[in-house]
Length: 202
Image (cartoon, rainbow, N blue to C red):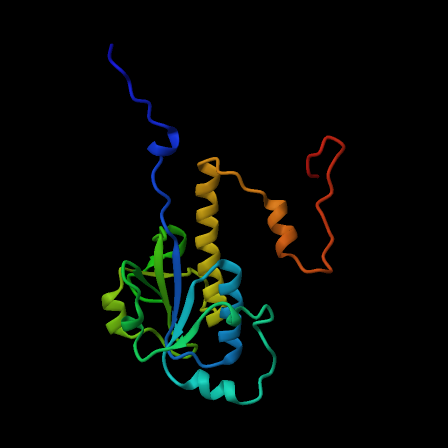
């Protein structure tokens, strides 16, 4: 009598791909922008932020207008000054430049890699050609006019999150939005969407 082998669904499932997100800033200028980027990094699960140049460090020593990193993300996420962003590129990670560069891919059409190192140019300049030439992809946000640095990082990270969420929905992965809202909202926020007697939103 022959015996048959049953393979479980879990064993047949593909192994979960490890996500990794890094931000690289080319010679950023203002602590306000860097602080906003650190706050965004905390919200969107960035693993580390790197920057080149000394302008941010010099400016950070002086009086600041206000603290943009109100969630103190810099206490949890490394913010590291480096001589070269290319040298800081983690292994097995795709280099993605985000800037208004001729020939770049519009962000809405871009498919984010599982492991990505997103590089952004300075507030008053652009990413150097030597980094562009090494990039696995170059994307731009199709706005009318350019956004500031922190806003660009927020939009890029939101785009990554939104597309990943759509994949979760397509795969019917369980997602409890209300639980996430309760965890993330401000302590003074107790608003909710009004519902009908049947439970559907108006």
